Image 1 (spheres, rainbow, N blue to C red):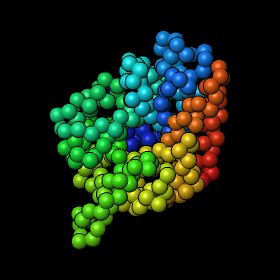
Image 2 (cartoon, one colour):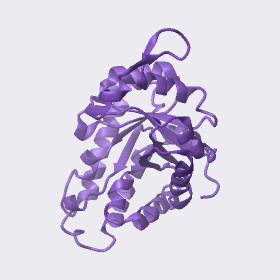
Image 3 (cartoon, rainbow, N blue to C red):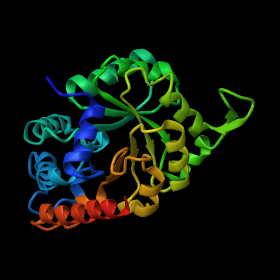
Image 4 (cartoon, rainbow, N blue to C red):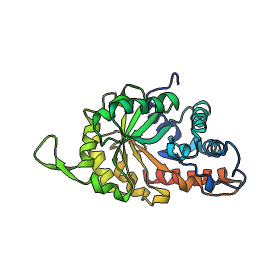
Length: 282
C-alpha cells in the first residue's frame, strides 16, 4: 500500500469531509445473505462490495471482522475487498478487526498479516499480554493500532473492572483505566494508537475520554447491541471538537436491514439514519 497518509490523518480528513462518525462493520454471514447470493462463488466479496459502494460516502471508516472471512475460507475475498475500498473509496480508512494478542514473535507475524497481506490502515489488538505483544505493530509507524480497553460484551467486566494500583500514586484504578493510561502515554510511540470502548457503557467512555484526551475511540455497540446514541456521543466527544474523536460502529443493523435483492439500498437507508442520529447527537 503506497502513499496512504497516517491513520489519524485519514480519520481527521474523513470526519471533516464526510461529516460522519459512523463506521460500518463488515461481518458477512452467508446464512443471512439474500437468496440471489446464497451458494454462489465469491458471494462474500460481492455482498460486502455492494454494502461498501452503497455507504462509502456516509462513513468515516469500514471495519471488516476477520473471523467472518476466515471461517468461510474467504481470506482472498477479504484481500480483494480491502483493495477495492482503497481503490474506489480512498477517503475511507479500513480497520481490520482481528483483536490479536500474542507474544512478540507471533505478534510480528500478525502485524505482517494485517498490514502487508491485507493492507489494512489499522488493526484491533488485545493488550492483556502487555506492551511486547503490541510493539511489533508499532514498527508500521503510519498504521493505526486500536487497543481493546472497555469492551461492549457483558463478560468484559470480569477482568476489565479489577482494581489495580495506580501507576502514579497509591490510589486504586480499574484495569481498563490502566490500559487507557498506558495507551495514551508510554505505549503511543507513533501517535497512532486508539482504544476500543463499548457504547453499552457510556460512563466508562467518559472516563476513558478524560484519561486519553483526543485519542480516537472505536466504539462498537450501537444498533443491534442497543447502545444509546446520544449518551455515547455526549460521553465520547472531544472537548471543543465535536464530530471528531469517535469511530462509532454499527454492523448487523446496517448489513441486514433487508435480505431481499435490494439489500444494499436498505443498508444505505439504515446508514443514513444512523449517521444522521450521530450528527444530531453531537
